[in-house]
Image 1 (cartoon, rainbow, N blue to C red):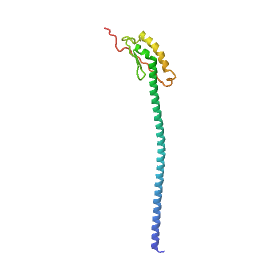
Image 2: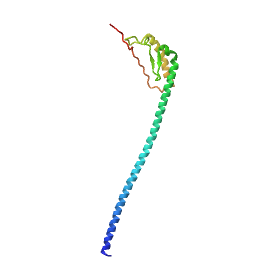
Image 3: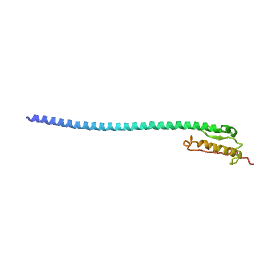
Image 4: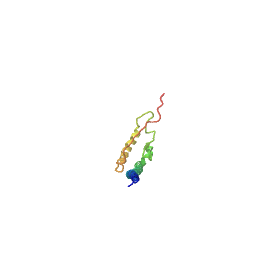
Length: 161
């Protein structure tokens, strides 16, 4: 072998070495891409699970809203059935939100006073047990979480000199 042939051999060895280095770099990039792909696929699986859970939660919320609306309408109907004969004489009304409002200023309070009048106590003694009976029926027993009772004295004050 000539000395010039050995030089070419060294260059070919060097080129083979460089090719191996680039091949290792390419393989490491391919492995990194594979890892990234697996992470994306795992994230997509988690996202799909979360989206399914969100759909189920949305359906549950919708079902709750529908049940609430139906119960609210049914309660309104039952309250009207129970009190329809008395609402006019009591000067009361039942709103669509199931609020019962007594409006008769002649029976509620005296001007400037906080004690209810005897006539209104008679109305409440008749109203309240019937109201509780409707609300505590098996139909609503587990649906009602809160009952609010509010009262306001007269909106005019006595005029003292």
